[in-house]
Length: 181
Image 1 (cartoon, helix red, strand yellow):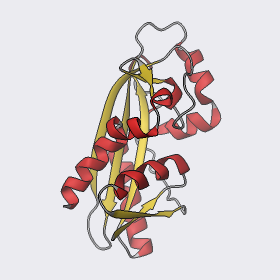
Image 2 (cartoon, helix red, strand yellow):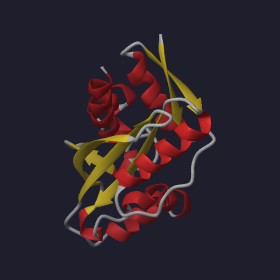
Image 3 (cartoon, rainbow, N blue to C red):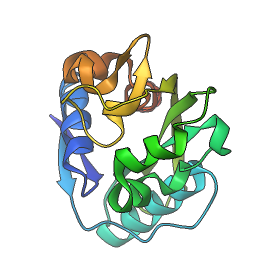
């Protein structure tokens, strides 16, 4: 079985990616060491930088995932700062920011960065368009899933199996796997 080191401390991300890779006969090995993230407005350079840095450090091929929720009326905030905002404010305060807004459009974006030692990194982007719900709904998923609504249900309501078929991470991972083949 082919193996890929996936660098993430996020248990939810690892669970999702592990399940998706197993479908293709690939074993995901989690590395929780992390990497220093660039301060950028876009996810692609952050994922590329992280993948290259860790591949050189570990001397083996690695993949990373940098993801975020981009809310249109908030000029794309929290975007690349999604993890920081989630950890320090949480969904209730994001909903508070949105309480008087009628434009609820948002997108979940995931960028897979992959790099082999001595080579340049490649990135693969997946996006899902949706809206910010008016309240948290559902107990599934993690992070912003209970407030990100896609076709009438939040990612927190649809369950991991269904989410893994349609998510931003699935879309990015499918592009990566197509390239890998």
